[in-house]
Amino acid sequence: MFNNWSELLPTIQKAFGALGKSNPKMVKAYMALGEAAAENEVLDAKTRELISIAVAITTRCDGCIAAHTDAAIKAGASREEVAATLATAISLNAGAAYIYSLRTLEAYDSLKG
Image (cartoon, rainbow, N blue to C red):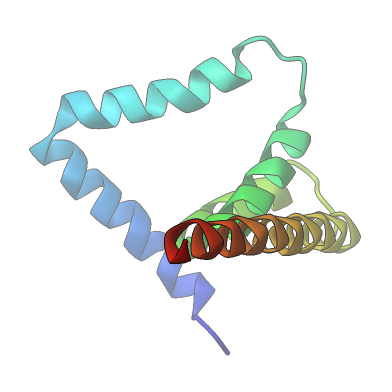
């Protein structure tokens, strides 16, 4: 197993609360980002959480994976929907790696002169 997700999520939540006590304005601003994203209700909670999982995968954030997978489950996401989300994230990451590979070759050619 990569992580003990059942232990990771409460550990993150506890640490999040501790940081909030140290810097309440920062945590309030952080929480406001999620609230603002949900405010217009164009996307339902399940869709927002599936998108969040894809972003968590591409940014390699275990805490984000735990939190947003839990939220997706609570929003009614099926395992199949999560798997489809992962396929999308994988395809995007591969595409991004390809584009940045092209940029790297361009940098090499430019710097080599």
